[in-house]
Image 1 (spheres, rainbow, N blue to C red):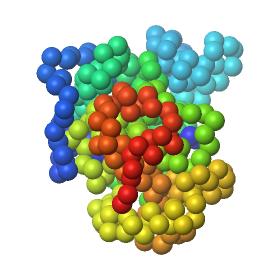
Image 2 (tube, one colour):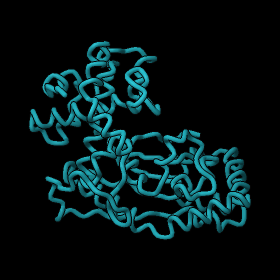
Image 3 (tube, rainbow, N blue to C red):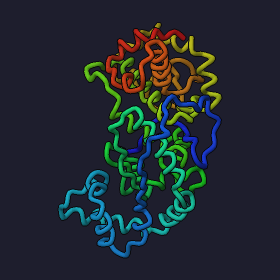
Image 4 (cartoon, one colour):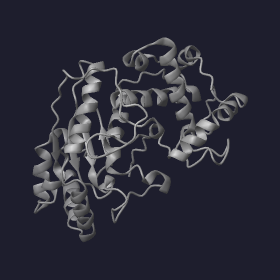
Length: 330
């Protein structure tokens, strides 16, 4: 099961309340409109009376069939439909489905959040066409991934995101589990969608390049979902962000003293940008993914020093030049 482990933040539209650090936007989206339709496949799936019903359903959505289910029209596809039908007949799965339906009885909040984010993206990228959005049910990954995001298609397996009240939860580490809640869906999708705009130098394998790449993704999300709280953007709890802010100088000194910025080791780099509960190499109290947080600070400093707008920042592929021009000093 491939899980999307993207660090994102809580969406603040609709039902989900928050206390944003800044909720202002330089983008005037008042005249920008987008058409949002979320196609709910999970409801049709659980009305299926046979594997053929599931086949018929998916064949009516060929983009979903090919891109998400990875089916190619061969005889082996029948095994997939038979297995899907077997899964939805499982009583335990039915319990999870009922909880999923309760958590997502209506999708107006998702529609609003997607619309707001897409309008902001269209402000910066006028040629942007929003992807088609599907929701589905996969039995926590038995029949598909938690999320798929591409230029033309977004698929959300809602059973992953029921939240802490769900009887069955995704099989991930406890410190990641909180991200599988309803409020994380849209920011997760937008963070992944930012990849299409995030230019990078494929020949630069340094830790700095990865830090800046993540930093640009956070900055993108910050601009197109401006009501996202900054303290949650890095995926940290409030006490963790306080610890990081109070120890920024010490953290930065660790990177400089150990010459980490230009480290290319595939063993060393994940210690600072990979999923971990803490960065033990610095201090047990420093949360994991600290390199991503530093990358965000560098990109913000780059924006302040250069005055460049979002599309220019995302297009800048030279992490070294971004770092130099940012003149980042904690």
